[in-house]
Length: 185
Ligand code: HEM
Ligand code: HEM
Image 1 (spheres, rainbow, N blue to C red):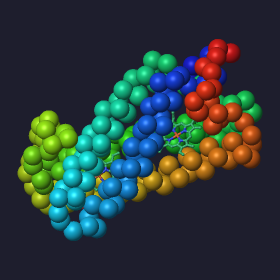
Image 2 (cartoon, protein in one colour):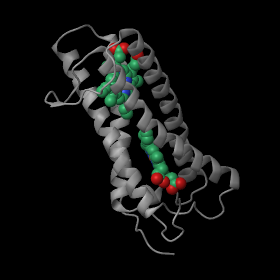
Image 3 (tube, helix red, strand yellow):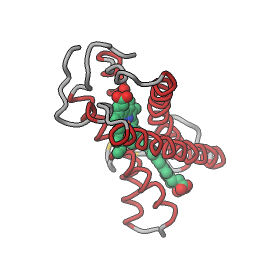
Image 4 (cartoon, rainbow, N blue to C red):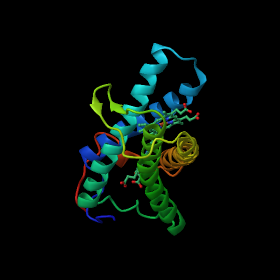
C-alpha cells in the first residue's frame, strides 16, 4: 500500500528500517560463524545472541508491518518505469516475508532439537513443536536456504538503492535517510 500523500518515510519507519538492516546483517554473520567454530562458552553466548536477536527481529518486523499498514509508504519517485515499480514492490514484499519466515524456521528448528529456548538466557520461549532431531535438521536446512535468499535479495536491494542515488540521482535513497522531511504532496 502506498499513501500517495507523503514524499518520505516517517522517522519511526526510517529508524526501524536501519535498525533492522543492521540486525539482519549481524544475524547472518553470527549465523554463518556458529557452525564453524568449536564448542565453548563464546560459542554458547553467540548461539544465545543469535537466537534472541532473531526473535527480536521477528517482533520488530510485526511492529513495522503494523506501522506500514497504518501509514503506508511514499509513492515511487516520479518517472520510474513500470517494471522497476513492480520490482521494488515485489522485492519489498519478499524482504518482509523472509524477515518473518527465516526467524520462525530457526526458532521452530531450535525448539525441536535443543530445548529449552530462552530469550536472552532468561525469558522462556520454547515453541510447542515435537522434539524431533530429524525434523529439526530439515527445518534448519530451510532456515539456511531462506537466509541465503534473503542475503541475495538484500544485495540486489542495496545495489538498486545505490543505482538510484548515484546513477539516476533521484530521491529514492534520500527519503529513507535521516533528515529527509515527510512532507505532504
Ligand atoms: C533474521 C533472523 C535470522 C537470520 C537472518 C538467521 C540466519 C542464520 C544463518 C545464515 C545461519 C547459518 C546456517 C548454516 O551455516 O548452516 C543460521 C544458523 C542458526 N540459526 Fe539462525 N537466523 C535468524 C534467526 C534465528 C532464530 C530466531 C533462531 C532460534 C530461535 C535461530 C537459530 C539458529 C541456529 C540454532 C543456527 C545454527 C544451526 C547449526 O548449528 O547448524 N536463528 N541462522
Ligand atoms: C545498506 C543497506 C540498505 C540500503 C541502502 C537500503 C535502502 C532502502 C531504500 C532507499 C528504501 C526505500 C525504497 C523506496 O522508497 O522505494 C528501502 C526500503 C526497504 N528496505 Fe532497505 N536498504 C538497506 C538494507 C535493507 C535490509 C538489510 C533490509 C531487510 C533485510 C531492508 C528492507 C527494506 C524493506 C522491507 C523496505 C520497504 C519499506 C516499505 O516501503 O515498507 N533494507 N531500503
